[in-house]
Amino acid sequence: MGTLNLSTSHSPGSHTHPNSKKKKQLHQIKALKLVTVMQQNASTSTSSLRDLGPSGVDLSSALFKPIRNSVPPLASNRCTKISVVGVGNVGMAIAQTILTQDLADEIALVDSKPDKLRGEMLDLQHAAAFLPRTKITASVDYDVTAGSDLCIVTAGARQNPGESRLNLLQRNVALFRHIIPPLAKASPDSILIIVSNPVDVLTYVAWKLSGFPVNRVLGSGTNLDSSRFRFLIADHLDVNAQDVQAFIVGEHGDSSVALWSSISVGGIPVLSFLEKQQIAYEKQTLEDIHQSVVGSAYEVIGLKGYTSWAIGYSVANLARTILRDQRKIHPVTVLARGFYGVDGGDVFLSLPALLGRNGVVAVTNVHMTDEESEKLQKSAKTILEMQSQLEL
Ligand SMILES: NC(=O)C1=CN([C@@H]2O[C@H](COP(=O)(O)OP(=O)(O)OC[C@H]3O[C@@H](n4cnc5c(N)ncnc54)[C@H](O)[C@@H]3O)[C@@H](O)[C@H]2O)C=CC1
Ligand SMILES: CC(=O)C(=O)O
Image (cartoon, rainbow, N blue to C red; front, side, top):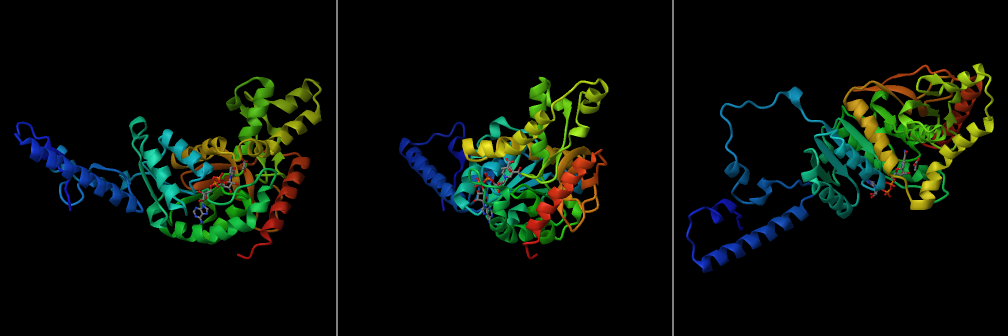
């Protein structure tokens, strides 16, 4: 087997005959080709100097001299690892946002399509010179995800233009039976974030299939819808969306509920302020804004075929809150039974939840009008009906 030894071929002061130099170059090219083939065959790989010396020379030890008496890192200095299952539009938008925001030391990618998977891994690795150092691995085998702090599941069918998220249920439940058990086995202490649709029912499915405690299984839920809501209100008022506090709760989908009674802009509780000041507002305008939120995904899917960037930022934002123990409040899919009058079964839907390093810490006791809580209970019923079709 050929050995690539750059240090010998470029050693200063070595006088070699032009023919033997040529032979050496040919030898190097052969070795390089061999390395490329080896890398292509490997199911998991990251490129490193060590890989360039397949049968002998460790180039790292030729380039660097270890310091004396060093001790291995403490167990508490371990790296942060995030796994992303599904490297389609959504998985890759999430992975690349996590990468650019420096949220992990290692990102492991899993998909059922090996070529697509390796292509995506290499494409991200090739940006190494412009990004914080992050190890990127990929495999069709869940062993690559072992020891993850956070596992994000985006694998599965997506909506065709005009199709409801709920239509995807049976197809994606079948996939989850193959995805969740090995994922949970490889990282038994991790937190699971479900993104695949219909996200609320699939979060329930993931909870059942993983056997994880309920605080460690959540869905991206209406974190995205609430961002769309905040964007539309901010656009209406010509202010920064980050100054708008507003929640969409319930199903991530058609039966979602806009909590108008609790929105505030720059600390001003908007509706009660208008009422106190006797300033009239059109209820229809509020309804239209909510309908725009509900229609957002349909519109984007109709235009570009899928949604990706906003969900990428939404999930990276959740990853930051959890892994950095930010204890921020996000509207995400959680077990809602017993909150706000939701009953009838173990239904998962979005409520404003306090998130930290242990996952879901608590559900926020936000004010809701009777009308809002009735709509929330109706949304819960829609999801429970879907759940009742499943045998888990
Ligand atoms: N919760 C949310 O807010 C959002 C959810 N979504 C959902 O995310 C999901 C993914 O959407 P896209 O990335 O656009 O779809 P996509 O078709 O681009 O990617 C799906 C990926 O899943 C992979 N996959 C399929 N079966 C698999 C298996 N058994 N194991 C591992 N990987 C498997 C496919 O090979 C593909 O790479 C859909 O269900 C979509 O509805 C999309 C946007 C927002
Ligand atoms: C596809 C989807 O669920 C969304 O963009 O909201």
